[in-house]
Image 1 (cartoon, one colour):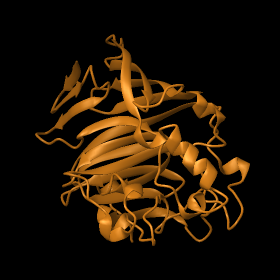
Image 2 (cartoon, helix red, strand yellow):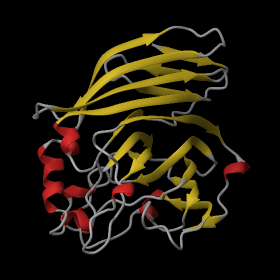
Image 3 (cartoon, helix red, strand yellow):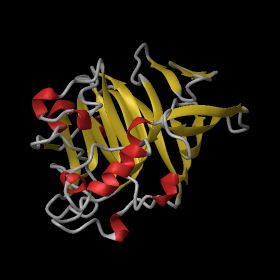
Length: 291
């Protein structure tokens, strides 16, 4: 199942329910995705005494090991020349019952190769009893050679929705490796208030995601599995691009995250973003700041 146009050919896997190939001008700027992004490596406050109980429930219910099962795929060519592919699926841990996410990802590919995505997702069962979710959004696997991370949003250092004073809006640029922030125990980090983000190679070719986002890029898929930084293992040939709708804040010591900065577990989420392949030399997305 796919969509094609001048200089691009996309394939949606029926089993995976996502893009399994995104070939543009002979390149593959996407390895796979987008797929549900609901987990993050717990930050220090979530591992401390006041956050331990909830952090344990995240793992007990399987937020750190979600697997997606496709429930149905629909595709009907649009009158406007676009190709819609709508995927209904369920995400849950394979070893846990009674906790899942139901979601619909509606993809619409236009003649220029842009993919407009509407993501509707809602927690079910025991997930709804959590005081908050770590994050809600989509993640993409992008080939390792696309190692330059750029974004228009808060920067140049890490920030959260409740920790962003001193991080001005701007266009920032960094290598994916330099996005890693070293703590005694590896933990998550990301920029807030992002309007677009990209992963590109040295020539500027790659993939751009736009929307109202909290975004991030990482060379490590299992930050939380490493007790110390020297135990980190790099992704095998890809970088992870997080394009999230909402991320729970950092809180304060020793106070928990305030309610307005939490991703509510009992809410339904409905948002949109756009994937756009970059052919290189995209001057409009050249960073003006360097981390």
